[in-house]
Length: 145
Image 1 (cartoon, helix red, strand yellow):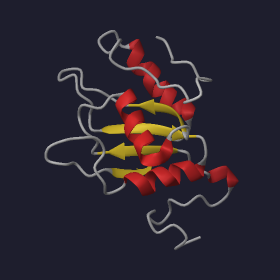
Image 2: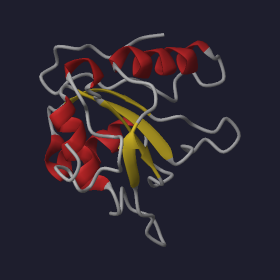
Image 3: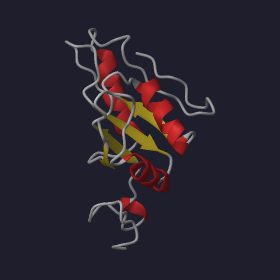
């Protein structure tokens, strides 16, 4: 398995079906991106329809994102494509450019991403600033508070 995916650091490659990972953490993204913005950038990178949940934590004080996002992909292969397409490249528009760090999230799965989003939505100060993005075919409705 080592050497098969040179864009991954050692220990990130799935070893078997039970250990397949689908959730990616994108770091150093442009501060003005929300869930829809992250989705647009992923779509531009050829990942349209490959993900089912996005969460972008936001600062309560500055109303900007915290420069990272969690994205859950439908397959481990899609997650690897995301890492390959995003790592070391600009993610969104910022001056000066910020180069993305993309890696598997320690926590995995759409449930994790959705729970993070639900926790944000249950906070009255955050309500209305963050929303989940459904799948591209509309089968997953936007989550409500």
